[in-house]
Image (cartoon, rainbow, N blue to C red; front, side, top):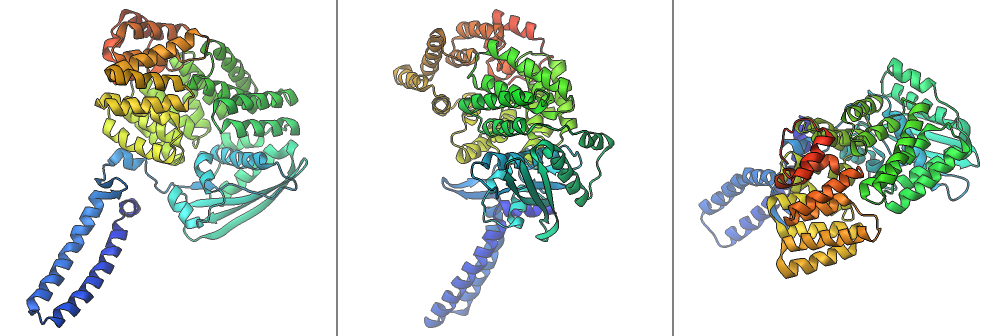
Length: 553
């Protein structure tokens, strides 16, 4: 019943019903006055009332089926899978709102943001809780919305508010638990600590919150919560700065994050999360095509292995191993095991579920990918990265129209998110919408700082159309690579494939394989059937040892 109620709200049925009643009442008053003035027959006023009554259910039906948008009245096309990724109340759903900064000195914003992220991470290690991610909850920083409004938008049953005070190494964290349904304070607590034992205090706070929500920790969770190491203040402070940069997810910020994580390790070489942070930053740079794959691979591996050696139960380290095994080492068995470990260690980690869904698609298990990607969206409903990864799964499943609907939502809310345009161009290419595919491709390269590629495509399209635009874009990227600039070789192959230059594309696929480029696991999803039949590409497919393909993307 609650799902139906939420769907009625989403489709604005209640709003239309209220507006109809108000407008109908006004029209009835006006009609009564005018008909009386002109002494009209009684049957006219009776017919008018009947029309208003009959129009009411018709208005409700139309409001269910159609939506009013800036582009006009359009059909509501969201189907059952998309609806599953819409917001619904999560059992034991907990949303940690951004903590208030009441520090004694300025310059501690990164620290307060870090405390917010770490509290979420600590809570998410409790499998019985559904903890919403930092990305989605940060949208409510300084929000004037009520707890009930926030809870309804996220699908949370409980909301946590709080504050952080820091003076040098002394820290005071205050948290309070609020019930969304009643908007009442259930519990509050204040924790005093120093930076050296702050990890234990964060685990204590998470454990206390779990008790207040009537959740029981498993034996493994109790064991992990009791075995929290101390950390040097300098190491933890640098780690939080590194995470502050990591969350910005730009090439520049990721390099800054690596520097801070390395500073954390210099202060405390036994601090596992810092190694996991380094691995995540290098993996992010590799995925963006902003670092040389051959040089980046060993850096990721060294960091992952060190993090796991120090703490094999660190979900972030297992996730980094899963990402490395999938998109660098092409070790499918290791990847599957690491993804499963990640989800077992942290059942509220949206990235773990989202990338596991992509791994399943790369393995040809497209339908199995639905459950984890929907879980990721429910955990992090307003994160453009998670939403984009969701649309990619729809693309891989051949649900192009549905993917297009969801992508339009992403680019409206996050117009600078390059990954959304990467997926959008594939969708339009599959649908044969060449102008739209070209526009999405150009936008993506502009956002990635490759303006010359976009310009070359303009010239090519003006000259000979879509295929020439893709061809010239590939030529431009190839020229940049020849000049020593960091360029994704797989992207050159993709543009040539879109241009119909199959032989050239196959040569660049082989070059990409020789340096283990991260997009190659998507080889069977992103490239044409004609290209996949080329001898060089068949050799790559054989070497990568993919499971038997179950779907042609």
